[in-house]
Image (tube, rainbow, N blue to C red; front, top):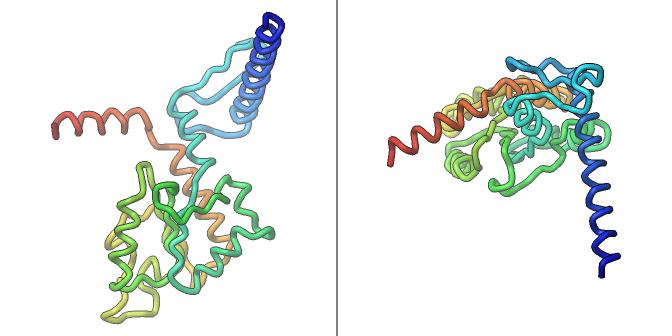
Length: 211
């Protein structure tokens, strides 16, 4: 029994050592290659800090969020075919950590509205959006989702931003997969600038006032 305890302790210490070394290496690479728009950048210099990693909570949380955006594919028309191509091997959206497309709003944080939004479908789009947990973002893919496109009729919503807030607009009819990847990179840049702790503090104050 004593030998088993010693073995478990050694394995635990070894795994902890590997984890912290991997984390330090990852943060050091990020600090040298990416400019973080916070007051204190992610940085690691073994000559200065030694075994200490210096960062901020906002920078770390935003890095986690920006590189794990799980899309909610709201494919409504022909733009959905181009959205399918983004996840295929030629364009490989998994390079950006967004290959996990979820058709459940409770497991997604970025709705990609791909196609024409009719008034008949607008209610369903809004319902799915409301069921998504915060923080959440939206990409309007294509002319129809952005402005109604060529459908200037009584049946088509003239832009999905009439019912839900849109973060990134993608032009084209339909846009190519590269345009979707460009929109995703712009969204990652926007996420990396969001003040996480400030937003959480404001949200807590709103809850206290409401209570």
